[in-house]
Image 1 (cartoon, rainbow, N blue to C red):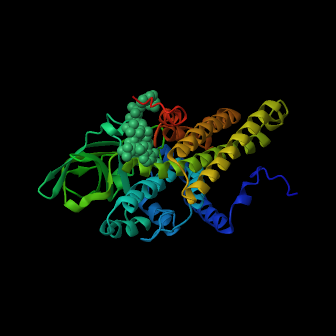
Image 2: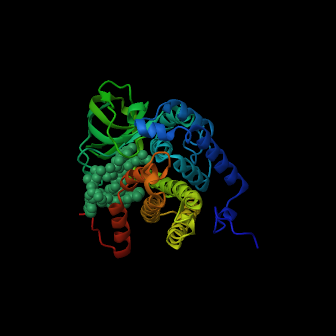
Image 3: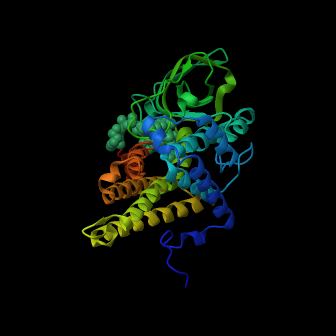
Length: 390
Ligand code: TGC
Ligand code: FAD
């Protein structure tokens, strides 16, 4: 019988192949070297300096468009991509966001719905991190209900002319290419927009108290003229962007458990050494109950992520199952971080420890890629057959 491993109490690593473990180790050591020593300072300053260099390094370790094939992408499995998301988010949700938006949203949209020319023009440079991408779906007045978007693409001869606003767009101000979703006379279509196009601008959104080590922007499209071949030919209707979201949401199912793991580990370490009433606080039953409950939810969440990853690799992952995972894992991760915060007492609110940073980051993660309520409604509809969105 193998000994009990406090870092893997359920023996989930037994499900992983040597190649999976190697990829996990590579990403973990990159994050330990390049993110962890600096992230508290970035967070405090509300910026992600050196984002272009970080993107190139992430490209070099194969983390951008990781589970896509061809065009310079790593062709990793869904489980391997998930493991990478977990390790990146254990450092900071902002870094995982950078990778999710690049690979699962912007690159995925071009890979899945783009023409051969679009794929060749953009994907290799995005896989290497030379070009950063963003994904513009949300608008100031249309977040959970993107079907009502107002950004419009009208035809002018063979050209397209785009007008509108997108809001809360990760990577927006640093992107070289934006995948922008817009209404057209023939329904919602996706457009590949070089960000140096006249009429395009992306002012950064400041004063965030969550995801502070991440670039978030507005996209402004004022008469942006694009050639006929800027449209993604294979995406018509809302199922285009929603199909991309499945992929990114799947990465978050894993990523959220990274933030939870980092907070849990900080709480365990603190509880073993911090003494009150003459004993380590980890020796008190109430602290142990918290730690046990956190461990249970953490490893159940990782097991769920793994299960969904295997389904994705088998081509059997349904959107409702992704909603199940995102709803559970982000909600439990934030609870784990908040409980970790209590174990650290006053130190829990300090940036010297990661728990408050992770907890506040997860407030965004709870909202983006579909709010908790949207995923409850997706499941509610699947369970009852009744649509409660409208
Ligand atoms: P509904 O009528 O249900 O569906 C319209 C069409 O889409 C199809 N569909 C899907 N297809 C693929 N995957 C899914 N998950 C799908 N869900 C629906 C559906 O079959 C239908 O197809 P068809 O052929 O009949 O036309 O649409 P609805 O208007 O009722 O909306 C459904 C709802 C509310 C679930 C959807 O609008 C939704 O998911 N809203 C949440 C919006 C959202 O998640 N936005 C995220 C923006 S991107 C982002 O946050 C990036 S942050 C990343 C980071 O920094 O890490
Ligand atoms: P709303 O849709 O206005 O919702 C407000 C509240 O009402 C929520 O609690 C919601 O669940 C609830 N609600 C709405 N409708 C219903 C209903 N029918 N029943 C019950 N409750 C309901 N978007 C992008 O397109 N690209 C990005 O890269 C991106 N990055 C982001 C980065 C950050 C840091 C953040 C915070 C957001 C980002 N978003 C991005 C936007 C994100 O996807 C939206 O914020 C999200 O979809 C919710 O939209 P909203 O904020 O407009 O909230």
